[in-house]
Length: 135
Image (cartoon, rainbow, N blue to C red; front, side, top):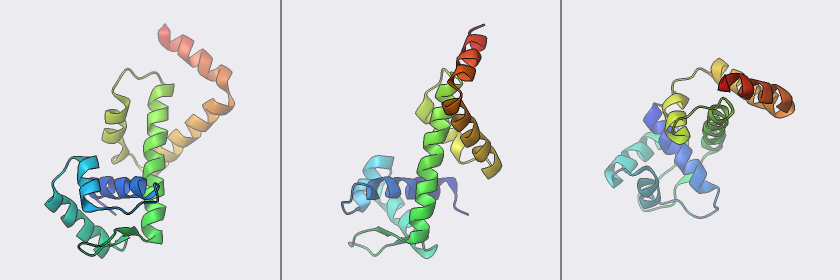
């Protein structure tokens, strides 16, 4: 199990990997607004846990294990953002999703996924909910 901080690093590495370009320490530091030494420490831990292949001054490469978890982390964030929009939360959706994502259990994330999918398939139900929420 990764700490919330390491999840953030892996999530960002996965996002960066989707561009097909090499991933560098400076790219990660810029995206997460953290120092280069912080990135290096996180990369060493992710390497030890076999989520990435990392050697100083070389490209950072996700392992299959890292790709699988990275995909889940990115998708979890997307679903939570969508959930917050659907329920009409008047918050900073990105910040709220970031705050929530690390502390929700897998059963709760699964329930949120089901809710989002249900509302996609039953838009009239969502319309009723929105009318109700406006009071």
